[in-house]
Length: 111
Image 1 (cartoon, rainbow, N blue to C red):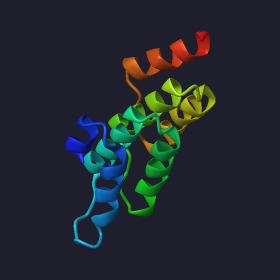
Image 2: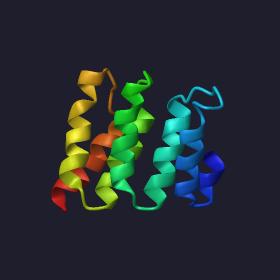
Image 3: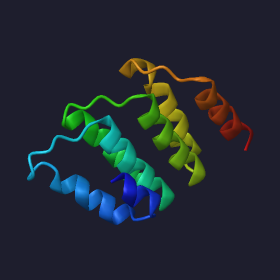
C-alpha cells in the first residue's frame, strides 16, 4: 500500500486494503494511513473520510498521523469545514494534535 501511495496509485491501494480480510491480514494504523495518503495524492478527500470511519468498524483506532493525513487532504481539496471538524474530533477520540496540526488549522481559517 505504501508503494501504491508513492506511485500515485490510490485505486490499487484501496484494492489491496479491501483484499486484506480475505487473505486473513488485519489492517492496522499504518495500513490505513498509507491508504489515506494514497487517496490524498489523488485528491480523494471523500475516501480519506470513509477510511477514517472504516477504522472504527474494524477496531483500529486512528492516531495523530491518520487524522493529520485526513485533515490535510480535506484542506487541500477546499473542504476546510470538514478539516476543522476532524480536528475537533481528535480529543474525544483520545488523540492529541501537535503544533503542526494546529498551525494547519489556523492557516485554513485565514484562507
